[in-house]
Image (cartoon, rainbow, N blue to C red; front, side, top):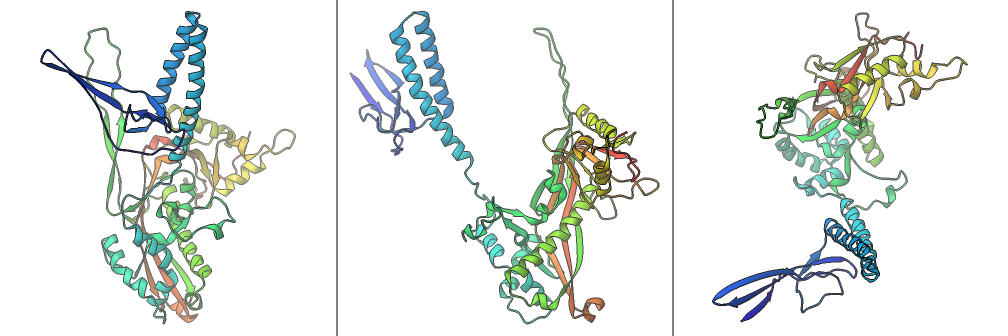
Length: 468
């Protein structure tokens, strides 16, 4: 007695031409009181080629499966060529062309799937959307200043924001979501953006305004407590041994990089009339001002830091490499690059960071024909960033400019969620003008994952030469 059965998974409809893999068919045979089971793969079909007599369920094939089929067809072509079998070779060649078309289509599908926008997997997305679209910094500050405004939603959110922050606000909490902006790929497309706000398409203006963030620093958002990140400080030794010889044991060495909450604050004076405005432009202006002020504080701490209650920035991190200024910026930057190369520093986000005075020196450098050499040539065509946040009072004479080279993705910036605003309408200077003094507090920390990833050039002053 012989019986056959088909393994049914579920029915799925696919568009015409999408490559599919047929599920296996089970069969059993009884002979002499013993039952033997056999499972075979029926074959491969495209939608529209389905044979009900062969299978009832099939799924799309993966690119790897199609490439395996292609390798098998190429083997057939090689075999036919060795056997001088033109007919078999032609059949295999036809199959190869058809399969190449399927592979190309599947690659396009794979690319489209990779470009699909990710979806948040945690958090209250409805609340996040409401905070972005409804929460007004202007109304929250105006209410805290005692002005007659309708700030019902802002007051209602304070309880939720206090829960997220794990503490009560000294003044009024401003959610980090209001400092986030919709990510657009065109500067003139704002009127085309639908009102369906999606959390995965927002970027933080706090860190986007930060220079070091633009250079590749890793930002960890939404932290609620201390965070410890394991770091490998030494790899296990690798040895060569003879056959059947035992390997000597060795362990990798690890330590930790810790981020803990540190508080940064900014004071600014706003006019009472500004707080009474209902204009969305004024609201956005206030948000941008707060973001700019806090981003400046983040930059200063991430670049240097190390002061009282400050995070340890790059320059304050123990173990970073140093290179003394030589005869020129051109020669010294080459030495810094070489040190990073020897330390196996990643190249993806390497760049120089220095002050605008150093930029001026590089721009004024000339060759023997009195022609400008160019900033790119001075720094060997490495990426360069210049900012006023870089310290210019280093060294024993307090006249040295920081010049840092390294992989900025090795710098981590931790950002805890809520921003605490304290409004003081009675501060003497602001009160005399009818204005309001506002203190914004942000909680951040910085840490370097691998100190050897950065090289600090010392001894660079305003009298440095671009090229000797």
